[in-house]
Length: 559
Ligand code: F6P
Image 1 (cartoon, rainbow, N blue to C red):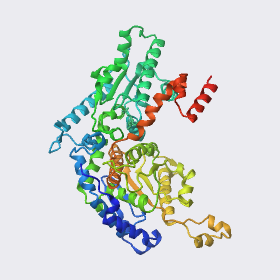
Image 2: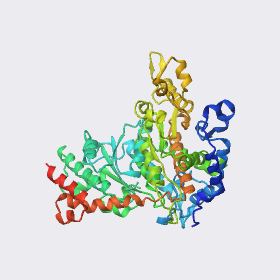
Image 3: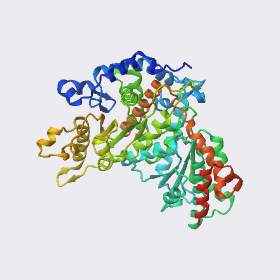
Image 4: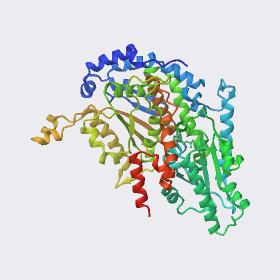
């Protein structure tokens, strides 16, 4: 594997340093002087319309950023990823989530490490679809012969965030009378609340875990199995013997994992397990068998359309020159903000209530990928890396944290996402409510970009100290993403857009965006601490003073 190119040693980096030293952002001036700016900075990405014009860049800065992508080999590394090279160096794995959405029959076929990847992907997709149809049609029945009304996905991280976000977004497509719930947290409250009101006879659990070793998921799977047996018994179903218990599990539990042996050891029939592969990272897995709850609740067709959306963006990245390549450009803009203008975070603000879990989904995608301080060859990074991604849907955020974006001291680049046609069009006394919603979407980026000068404030009659308080500096960078409707295709495009933004930034920083060693230490320590909480004094004695004191508090207050 090639050593990463140190981005700070490139000539593009030097150019960007020079731009920065003479740079005064002036969106008002740039817009006034340049009638072509919006057209030049607005680009199509499959069904998405992406307006980059309100970012703090000139054509010269953008050209240097594109040169940075060239000099750090972004396109070559993307090609290496698509071809199945082991770009996940620390785990010696290919990174092939893009293979999950290659259409059937695509030429040439993708064979990696001697494995016909296309054939494997299509085989699992076919079995997922067939199973989803059996559940949706009522052919699949619970232990008492009733059809499934609720699927409950048990997973965490990439085995939860993708499915729950997509389900919430595409919920208008859940028309087969099957709803989905998602249990992730090992806080027992999550389990207790999510099974409330469920009929065990019509509930199907999906245990989703790439490794099938994750503490939270296996604990919750056992809790769910106990709940099933208890609730069935309360309903008068015979589940006293081992055979009866096993039959209940066989009718009400399926699994998704790369470790099918462990699935079987848990007691789930391998015939009811759906596989994927170690070349699919957890946070990149919603388009693998991890999407099973989606295929069931939304339908295999909607799931197929989602994959089509992903693939359209994969193709755009592969086939579009860098200067028109939307995910690459958005990644480069992030580099400009993080490494040259000092941004520490990035807001994603969907003006679509259905996307309310999208920022949470992106937090894992971006921060587990690029929250690194060593490069893919183990050497330290030479710059700041992964920014903090966060956000909430508009307009709710407007009444909470937008104050800081408008008038605070921090630079927070923000992506505003909206659709033209709402899933639920409503009017209020003749007023199209979605149009009013979109007026807010447009007003916010306008206010952030162009602000309000002291003269404008004074012209409205304001005087004294209030003038400063009511002045808006402007030059707050935003990207506007607009789509016709929140279809499965559009959602697939949005997710893939951010996957490839993340990839672009990772390559420039020289990071392996596909491992996550930073989550391991806490997991190990939790296993060591658990006995100390439960009363093991030897385990307690080996803890640091703060942990000991906190455990003492726990023991003293436990009822
Ligand atoms: O702890 C982090 C992580 O490994 C994520 O990367 C992953 O998505 C999540 O845990 C769940 O892992 P699994 O699917 O193996 O249960």
